[in-house]
Image (cartoon, rainbow, N blue to C red):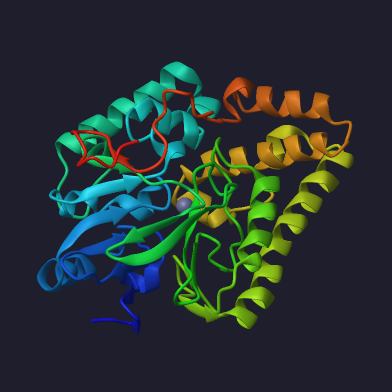
Length: 346
Ligand SMILES: [Zn+2]
């Protein structure tokens, strides 16, 4: 079923050309067992992988649902996560906080949202998995920025924060492949609308994807596999969308637009899409808050406007930015969390 084979790596485009909630997966063929990167490609891919391969290890680039919702299809596999995502994969409250639900609804209602997730997990059926299925999975931590082996193939999980704090891009030095994931080059533009997103980090991380000696870039959604030259060109247009959004926000603020109206200016989402899917408004509000904070950080004297924006939308400013600082107790490096490892834990 492969869309593309390069050495031991098979690139598996998801359902509906990997449009969210689907995403592209990489399968790495090993001698005895195989590894899988990201798990949201859809049932046809899951069925193929279960039938034809022996996936023992699944690596997730970050905690977003469209990259992990299929994990429950592979209950025997060990799920490898990064240390930044560990709190979220251990506690649904952290997912709500990192997503921005605490910023939008406050702590109490944010926890209500989490309770909904738990109920959803209780009644889940195929194709309707939630984060809850990950909390109970057998997990291990992969390290950032140093060489590891996935089913015998060398990989470096390059930490590329911004889209969310834990996001990373698997790099295959032996094959010149960089899996850039949610640097997806879509017309929508970069997505940084969670509490644990950071626009400046995303800009920096985008530049870093070009410092890697890669010839093929694999995106998680729609675009698929592109050459280095195409990636470089498309990335510039894609990242340029950030400036256009920021100009739009800044212009509205300078013109004295009431903060109530700012969320209806299609900075991110088209009004018709918000009407169809009202929860997109959560991410519209968060994205605009991120731009306002960035404008302040870059010297615009709009602190008062930002405060009014939060008040106008009933937002909780203390939760707009979520950063998990790994504590000394956070395991780093390679090691399984839920049961004694086979002597590899340092
Ligand atoms: Zn994502």
